[in-house]
Length: 457
Image (cartoon, rainbow, N blue to C red; front, side, top):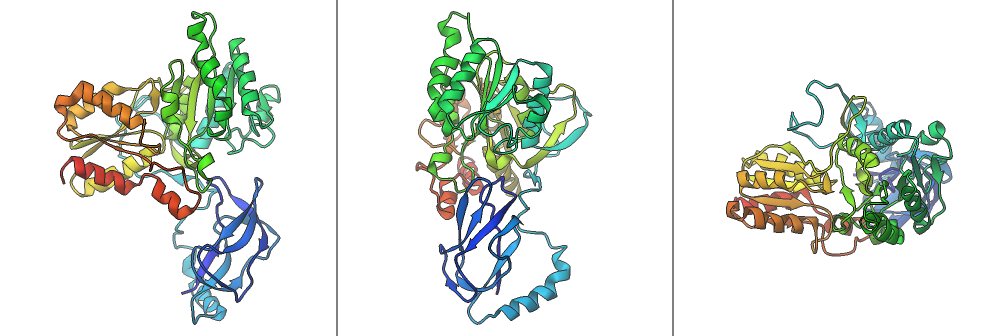
């Protein structure tokens, strides 16, 4: 059967690109892994590989075509014995129902729906009956920064491409137009330099928001973050602090390699003097960002590139904030506790849905902040369910889950009916190849299996 080759999304935020050059022609035989074309985005030119084998039957989009939307058919791959005429006949026959058929993958430009949630989130951070608005995580972060910049003129944003380009991930869209170049500042590609400038500004009483294009690049600035921002309040006897936010995407995205995919949650969680936030939903992203900007301490705000386009309900309030150190119970359960944070919540919630079909009731807790961490909520849940599984994308040794497990063992050992299982990413640098990347990440099925193991099902 003929297979349509679609314009690929070379990053989770890509919406369109230029089909710069075809490296195959009609009639060529290709195998999985062969380079088909070069795709240009506003960031780079990348090679596009075949994932199936067959014969290039028809090229639908000519090379040099600009503005090709993600998921647009660009070519047709035929199996043995098929011809391009067969594809044209079948596509004409299916043209009418094709408009109503759901696509396998939404276009990158459209907000992605979050996984199914329980009808009611327990202990909401807003009054009952509050009007809710569907908002993407990207928009929620932007709205939080804009509201705080209107509220306090000492707040400013700086980082690579935050101004003229509207943010590498469009998180700062519209901020330059509203606040001007003195408060939305494009920097050179020198994390050590602009993180140092921002830390000095915070010592002087301003409230900088520093955007890293990825927290992997914050390694260049880690001396300023840890030795200066985090420690100065203590070392100065409380005379000088650093009220500032370091924010940006953290962890794996999609095929960006080992040096752009590391999860730093456990690293920063260890540091006295820092506060560490890692939200999942748009509401939490907004409420916690506003709290972070107001906090008198340096805050590490770990976002996720995959989540930027996901849409959630956000309360429509004049000033919506969420306190640090307060976990959120997304789903109540009685058989096992699943604890996660950030994009790990996707796997936790999907696993809870699957487990419910097998008669296993899982309670799902979103930590939201890792320092301070709401361990009492976790402990009380374990006392009820007697079992615990933690979920994260970071590496196993020295993981966030390992710390939670040690605390639960000390504070609630007598309540445990099974060993604690910590689900993590695999203990390898992130591979670039898509098939290997999938194996390196935690999966929903692994969480399901862990819960079944602790419940002896």
